[in-house]
Length: 132
Image (cartoon, rainbow, N blue to C red; front, top):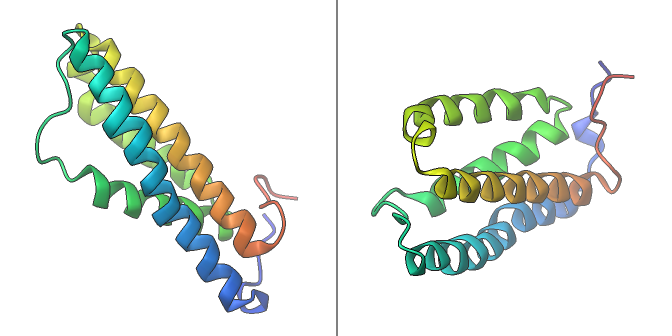
């Protein structure tokens, strides 16, 4: 697999990429997931978001990790992390909590998108997703 020479990257562009990924991603996901999706589920009598689950700092850390994975040419790490997250909640989602699972999927897809966007900005080009 071809690796990226990280020493050739412009520091400012890398910082902007990580800021877009983590901070802008946090703001967008806060509005879409915390304010809209959970409120929607609450209005439809679906059990809502658990309290005090540290979603904001976890999401920021995840998007930073996703950006780093794309920059380092190791996007497989993202799949491993998602598998761990799904396994931890599998029993809960097998039941009647499909709506919360869908919010989980939307949030993760958006976080991966922001990680990819941050890497794109940092590299000044599309990240390589496969070796070659």
